[in-house]
Image: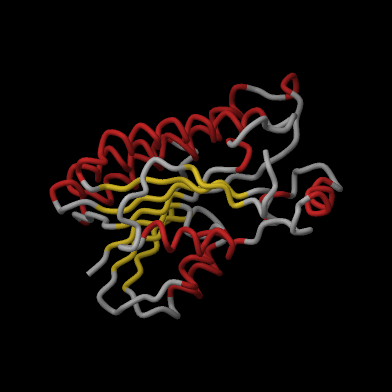
Length: 243
């Protein structure tokens, strides 16, 4: 039996992974979401695994605390974790941002993952290990774009924390990796300047932007037993584009 903890389960990458994965009736899934419930609910009802959907607002301290307490009450020790919570991205100059913008990104991206991992890492170790995948961004691969400082800062912080976990728990057979997709056309790009998405696609070697299924297939491998020796890696999913 495998136990999957999917954070940000209503995000496009998480939904694409859940749709493509070969589930069994013995699998158990806790799927955390905040919004866009309908697509997740429909998918959860179509797979044979036992899925518990749990709404939690990771932007709020109490939302994170309540979700962690729920995991404790359920005595849920995951064998696989996918961390993919998403938050709307918007272009803004530094002088247009407030610390609250940075805090919101850090809460959703980093604080939630910290609290969850702090709760489940020891049980995972005692159970014999596991696999963890964190969704980052190609903006962590080299020089990031302008006007996204809150988003980029949170992704770099998440990368540093994830690499630290990978190093600390490699000896416990917990393999922790990251994927970094290039621009992906999702519902969270509404705040990006008009034309940026089209420009990104035109300049990509494959002449298109990333799709959720491009990342889902890599998530599948990194979470599988086929991955026996990859940990601490941040793998680009960019169609050959360099960042």
